[in-house]
Length: 320
Ligand SMILES: NC(=O)c1ccc[n+]([C@@H]2O[C@H](COP(=O)([O-])OP(=O)(O)OC[C@H]3O[C@@H](n4cnc5c(N)ncnc54)[C@H](OP(=O)(O)O)[C@@H]3O)[C@@H](O)[C@H]2O)c1
Image (tube, rainbow, N blue to C red; front, side, top):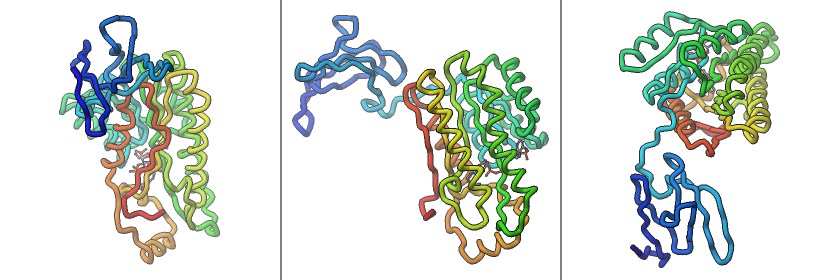
């Protein structure tokens, strides 16, 4: 059957062995094995195709989402994720959001009572979770986190390196202990957790590593000097992981750079001058942790060949 669209492109309607009706421009003369079927359904949202256009033959894949945006996606259901820093804020919201998509979630952080509460909320709604008390600065505890997840759920599909601290202070206060804590949690923690899951992901040649960086990694401001330095390190680590792992495997790296989000993060700041500075220049809009979680779920819920490498999520009114 042929139809003519508004811009005079002729489309052929093709029924294939999948629940969708597809439309291709008339110059799309595809063949993939079966003579009668011009395209081959190779996944929930993907087609393999051979296209002959003006004597040129192009082979490859194209996303079916172009043709039917309302088709539900199911890339996440049945996967296994580890979320560090799952006891509050973005980690908590993401653990809940992933569980709602049918992902089995290992909840990893130090405050066990918080993890128990989240575990109960997940399992009460039919989800599956595992509590794994973990300090991400400990090599033994991060290894145990990965081992326990493998023993309980049999695989690790997703690691979310979310645990972090933001101990903002002006540099002349020389709060060296706080600088080192940020380096330990924000940089070493990300590296140790990544090292703990990589052997399993490399063996399976697939997986997703989500690193929660910050826009502060690119935008340095007074009092964020060390915090920004730790997040810039996360940006670099993410890009290096992507270059070394993604081309040879199906391991995807998602570096997330949120703007201002309402969480407990600022509650640990000890320099009063930071709060005085904010009183003079208050932000007018914040994201919720659920807003950020929703964006990450969207980035993860894509076909294997689609890799969102950097995800910046700001409140619309945030300038920098
Ligand atoms: N809120 C924002 O505006 C914003 C903006 C950009 C980026 N981020 C990033 O988002 C991530 C999550 O922060 P959040 O805003 O959701 O703040 P949050 O509510 O304070 O969450 C921080 C999480 O990190 C965990 N954590 C801290 N030290 C840890 C350690 N040594 N081992 C294991 N877990 C540890 C905490 O859990 P326990 O205390 O139970 O261990 C907590 O669950 C951080 O990486 C942060 O830098 C936040």
